[in-house]
Image (tube, rainbow, N blue to C red; front, side):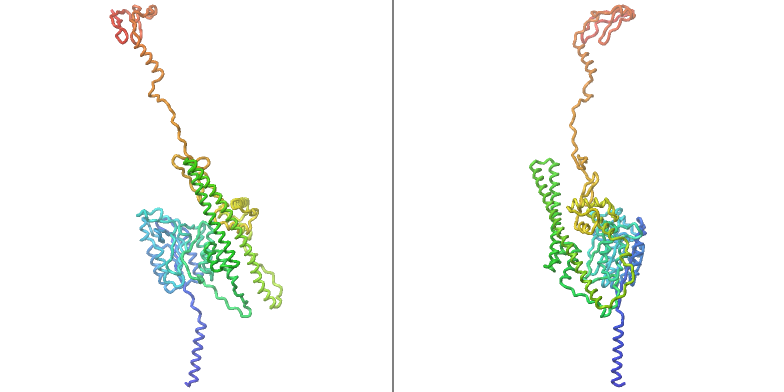
Length: 627
């Protein structure tokens, strides 16, 4: 082969190699998942939803294109450990490793454990032998390169915590799961409920948390952190703010979707619209809207550090003034509450008048400061709300102008199109109406600030109007109560804390956002004003004891007896005797014989003889002598 032929062969080989390199598809990310569901617990009441939830999640991940989805249900401890070992082997060359668990979990001394179906947990130390720690699951997914994700729907009310014996009084067994901070990068741990709280199984076949996960996690191109944000909002809405999912851990700055976005074909160069280049004003607007969505002082300070001047900097400063006014209001309210408590305490204890007068003055001053702080907060909120409404209106005008310009340019360059056929718009196919959504949103916010007690039903009835009237009264606003509007919704959203006071039944008192039972101290009782009042002591009443003093009859008898003993006794013979009456009664001699107790006729055939003696205290001088 000559030199020119060899050169042609080399060129051909290089062309084939280049073609293979260019045409070879990019290697897709490897995604693996382990799904565990425990319902059939052997030593406590079985659960209904965990296996159903795990089945839904397994199907969701399979439909999302995961390379491996290992679904296990009702595993004892040994089988669970074996499943984790096998899954660790699968995660060694994976980019995304996910573990989903539904069942019972428990927190002991700040550490979290998953409970297999054969666990007994008779003592608190049995957790270390019979349950699996969360750290063991993190070890199984540690080899994954891009994302290590653990989803725990295990924040249920745990029956084992109520029955197990405590071997140490200092060993804490908490409610729900404990807060966790992953030490390795690219780790996210999602709880169905915030640390220290419990989650609901729901009324249906699946829990609200799992339903929201299956709805948002498989969205193509959606960052996993934003997906969990949507899950949180959905669960809060479903449970009326009783359950808040939470995510612990952090990722980098790039989006990390569980399902990659589909590749869109590149449009023709002539038809591709040219996007306007970003301007400093548009970047400031984007960052300000992000800080406003976060809605705290740190976000606004970070924005001002990046944009210290300009239109959006002024808006951020108004938001900071609103936060400062709210903090001042909270501090003034707490100071007024403490001053009133001190005044009531001194009055109840009967302190000196000078102390009570000083406490009364302090309470009045604190209440005046609280009212001033309330007014200042309202002014700051109104200013921020007005500025935000103006900004939104200006932004809407700018967006319409920006969208109309390319359309006008395209219309000018294209020939006239034929009249369009009659079609049905997407809005016409939507279910529900915007008015009902606004009403539900306003009712939800009224419940949040404590003014609405009935359920959220989308009906702006008399109860909803009364709740908005209460809001106007306690918030100092003048919102229209006849109908719910977006302006009303925005005004209520500005209130960060409870507005309407909490009303409790008799025997209970308001303590923050809940009613607690009133417990009166010993010697006090709950009066008609729902307040503790000291019980009045009964004054002792002087009375005579009937057992110590003789009765009137006994006193008279003793008096007459003593009188007889003190007087000299007259001889019986000198006492005039009713002779005729004695004979009529059958006496023999008509004589009467008397002694110290009574007098009686002398018996028939007998007579009296005086033999001396007699007198008070002596023997009777007359003696009855019978033949």
